[in-house]
Length: 369
Ligand code: NPG
View 1 (cartoon, protein in one colour):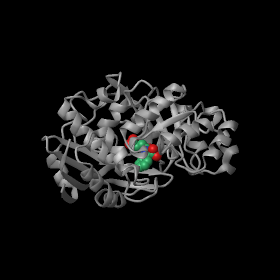
View 2 (cartoon, helix red, strand yellow):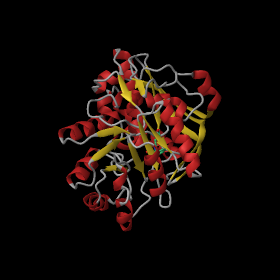
View 3 (tube, helix red, strand yellow):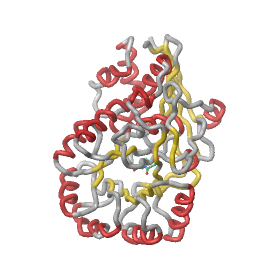
């Protein structure tokens, strides 16, 4: 496939409610959208999951756009006729920037699969038609507000609740929610907010029968996670630390993680995600699909990935309405706590061009030389 033109837009979607994590509060979701057009007449779409500021990962929107325009796209143009499976190799000389690389690979994959008439799910190896949905619940202003929000999600049908935690907002919210919903699959996510000195505190989460504690320590402290995992009963799950297949392989070898959150943007794309999935399946390690406040474009591809056999835990693959009043695609609507895996070619969703136009904050066209 040969790329003719690339459109890069920034858009900004309002969130239905503020989303607070240990690294900040978001009121809206600004993001980078990419549309590629090929000489064969195909169109491919992808969104870049990088946030506006480098608070979750070193990547950030303007940086991703810069590296895409300055280095990554020129390398793809120079490659010429390219298949999705060749994109990672073509971009390998440039270090890091997994989210930017994932965007390009995903857009090319979408275009190729549309040409071939194959859905993302079939291509990746999905064996489910629908997937169980979990929901991520931000840090609330009070326990009462948290209980109200969780009640809403439980009555919406979500099959797993993830509470964001940080020092000072951990044991109490977990014990209250567990007390009110003794049976619900429950897990917590600290986004690196603790240190090795907090092992005794994190051990106090053991009685609450949590599915897992996600990324309690710094992303570089893989050994610290192994030390923690040896001391607590609750499974430890790495997110930010897993930036590639190799990082996953090594973290497993160190016993720093017994569950893995796979986020395609964080690891450089869906093909790398499948490699990590396969590694985990071989090693009997359950995986689940993380979320980064994706619109319907990113969500569609995530839902397809989450339908692979090793994804045995519900992911952060919630309905569009969890974050947005209006999505930029046909919305993902949950039924009985599940989302249907799109079956159309490529990511398999309809793009709402009018709405995208309305919320566009910048637009740039890049034509292949
Ligand atoms: O459902 O899309 C979603 C959000 C899930 O909590 C969620 N994501 O740390 O995993 C995370 C967190 C996140 C959100 C990370 C935004 C980075 C940016």
